[in-house]
Length: 245
Image (cartoon, rainbow, N blue to C red; front, top):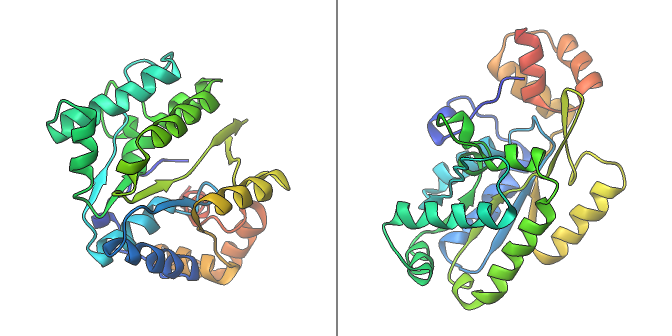
């Protein structure tokens, strides 16, 4: 499947769904409140980032896009963490970590999405976080470092809103699976635990919504789309890629 990086201007053809309206409603609160952490989950191919960018664009949110430009896929979790911090310091033109958090508090939200997960599709010579997670067996330790950072700077985080395009991917054969949505029983348990701690919005579609999304992009018979839904589920991007050949 061809990967696509999303930015607001890419969403010229966008179909509103119930999941999108829920996400937009959640993100609208970020204009007025701080201290929110939102996880947007969804199986690969549902267009999580497309929904996020569309909502940000419609709501006019001022968002800082976090980047992860790794030079080496054999980097340790600590090195990955420090790379992200250093990238942010350079981007904001500051030297101290406390100043990073102060500057970030000027934004409506901090976004971890395509530029973080898949920066290798945007720049030559770098690796995105998703590439590293597929190679490294120490991903859980990286998340522990993030939790440690949150606890250490908890007062600073109260002045921030954070949106995560949340994916913990496993690659089996030619297909990518997400542990929060694709693994029976385990995914439901993990998503429930995540929802007990943070605000979670799941991007998912009904078959009717999936057909509507696909037809908005491609003039094709509903019967053909339905057959692909039987094989791939309600994943518009997967279906569009297969239909386009």
